[in-house]
Amino acid sequence: MNTKKEYDAVIIGSGFAGIGMAIQLKQEGIENFIIIERANEIGGTWRDNRYPGSACDIPSHLYSLSFAPNPRWSNMFAPAAEIHEYMKDCVSKYKLEEKIVFNTEIVGAEFNEQQGIWSLHTSGGTELRCRVVASGVGGLVNPKYPNIPGMDRFKGKAFHSARWDHDTNLAGKRVAIIGTGASSIQIAPEVAKVAEHLTVFQRSPCWILPKMDMPISQKQQNVLERFPVLQRIFRAGLYSFFEMLAPMLIFDSPLTKIVQAQAQRHLNQAVTCPELHAKLQPDFTMGCKRNLVSSEFYPTLQRDNVSLEADNIAEVLENGIRLKTGEIVELDIIVYATGFHTEISKALFPVKGLGGRDLTEIWEGGGMAYRGVAVSGLPNWFIMMGPNTGPGHTSVLVYTEAQMKYIRQATRYILDHNIKSISIKRRLLIKYNEKLQRRMQKTVWTSGCNSWFLDASGRNLVLYPGLATEYAMGLRKFKIDEYDCA
Ligand code: NAP
Picture (cartoon, rainbow, N blue to C red):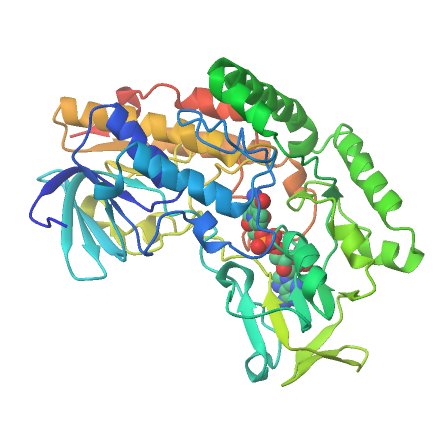
């Protein structure tokens, strides 16, 4: 890495956001940039979440970059390894290898107002200087472990779903999975196939829709490759389908009950044992917590070698878990599928913008950005997958693409006009977020349940309360008059 050099842009993170952003900059003819990655490989969430059964729960033809189409998805919902391969293919197809600096973490940043330059400090002690920063660090990165008494005295193997220990052989072992979220319901069916016994520890049951997965045959893949227009039509069809579902999945309305009835039917048909059914019956409006998709989870729970413990953990022992009933479940392995620290609206490291003001201070009352991308007082700094940009009904990459294309325009503008700094007008940011939070009150996410979408004060700073189309339209054109310039 040439630390003396001044880059036009630095991209932080080489997950989908970082890779896509790099492709966009290249397509704009901007070559003077680098990508900083703290791990030794690209891939973000698809590098880290490699537990057995890890796969996408949005169809891959929509959960991929529209400007880097892949006709070769093997299934409607591709497994993690295939998604990771796709990302690596993007890196090689767009010649990004030389742009990525691995094993380097940004630990601090400050803006020099006189020069219009960001200085980024790395874990290795070097300083990187650039005009524009595009941050694609992701919001669900750092594993969250539960706070169960005795966790550190367990003598068997214990690891988080996002830090899977691939050296641990599950065959013939007594395994526990703690949590029943999006990761757990993918892991459990695979573990149950090999473990002697699997105990799933559930705190609260979630609504689960069946997964309409199917292989995409070689012949179908060939057709999509030969006629790219068909792939575009297929993607547009998927996009429209999910957009049509938005009013049902986002807003707390009578329509929500239609989808909930589907999930209820799924539960009723899949689980006939009254005792198990009662344990799995959610007690909140569907969508309030993240909707789950699996056709395998309910059948898995009914295997002879699987049991479900509902809200029944007292403590972890050296050799297992003691239940609140006093019974001991002896275990060899504990998997914590307990989610992530939500860092979407938090500063991951000190970032000092105009007047040396730190992002943590700017975001003291909660992380807010204009359209999720720009923060007043942080000039030339753009966020991907930022505050209130998560979807409740479709592919997150639709939102991320809109952000990448917007940042591409902003970068071009800054470079072409030799502008030192652009900072989003504060009144616009406030107005945008007030409107967004007013609308949030009508969503199913605030209908009364505990979820990682909500912060300590009950505010949702994670999801976008509207259609993807509306979000993307808002970012379609970069408008300089929305910024204070210097
Ligand atoms: P999660 O959805 O946050 O689920 C965590 C689970 O752990 C919940 O069931 C939670 O119960 C439980 N839990 C937490 N603390 C516990 C405790 N002390 N005792 C017992 N149970 C406890 O985490 P995740 O499943 O890893 O998913 C996180 C996010 O990653 C998802 O929402 C999604 O955005 C993403 N993801 C996506 C995919 C995909 O296919 N696209 C796959 C996996 C993950 P409560 O419900 O009671 O809190």
